[in-house]
Image (cartoon, rainbow, N blue to C red):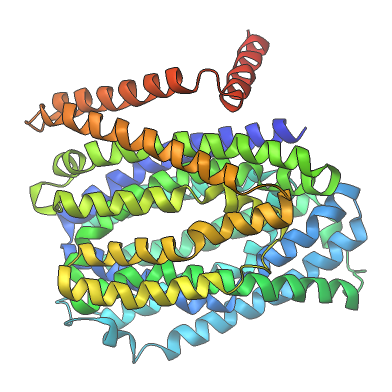
Length: 505
């Protein structure tokens, strides 16, 4: 059942993401041709500022989700009702708090700008970002229940249906009115509608949530949530700082123009990361269920299978990025939006290093093991901020990504797997780093070969782009196959695909 739920969640996620990507890239193309690049920079900057202000959430959702695994497994209706009612009160409070904090920051956001861009109604634009962020909390707490109950596909359907139509209407607004204010108002409306209708769907699936006779949360249960929360809070806060300071650093030192240029590359890497994350998100609840019911040996076996898939996917995507990102942006937006190849290498390396952490992060979220490395994300965030500022002053835009890479290698790169192996798997960490080194060397070699072959295709047009894409698909994946064909983890996926194909036939 766990495998079936994971596969179903994954299929819906891929379908939704496929259509979401098409419409989002089309919307971005319309955006840059109807508004200037500074609007992109402001959008990225305000999004990052609001993400920092959302530190108030700090993992309370993760804490309650972890507490839901057992009652969902046992179908303990009363406890589920109690936890969800508590969750509702917390998230409504957080929504109001974020609206207040966002408005209070209004006089100060301009300190994050190198110079004020030539954009009218900048304060109103910022307030609209605040409203969109704040209202997302008022119904979204129910999303956690269906995800934790291994029904992520339901949340996925609502997410991408509303996202698709939002982008369609935003494209119409941009083409007809060239108005960024209306663009943002539509975003607020669709954020509310998505959460509202998903909330109604969850009420139908779990009618007990509408019952009035809800018990107060027990002190012991509340203490468990607080204990998990205390550990999660450091990870969430450090993660928020790590993800959001790059654009603020670029804006303050180099200007919003460079934030706008980088935002297109970030859109590509983030889209890829979002697609890939669906794989890991689809199995979090299953791993949480596995943690409740199975042995450490079974957990370790699953960990290595997921890590193998993790390395193949992120290795392949990194090779595609380094070979295709600049030609794609040139075809999509034009030569003026291309960054130097050395900067692209740093962006891709950052993408790969962060991506290879996915397995450890997934197991940590599913098992709730946040305590032992709770200070690591804070140290990583401090190193990132300091090194990015220093490197950016000396090396320009590439310095931001070098700082992020350095901070990760100094902390989470080695500390996260140490905690997982010590606490959850109770196994030898040497196996992890041996595999990490092997997977990375293979990917590096294939990346060099693929880039060299693609370099012979000098012209940039649709035909040559698809020729490059063909090389990027064929060379790494066929080589991966021959290198790993005797690997037991690879053969697990091979057998899984065969069984699925035979069943469908």
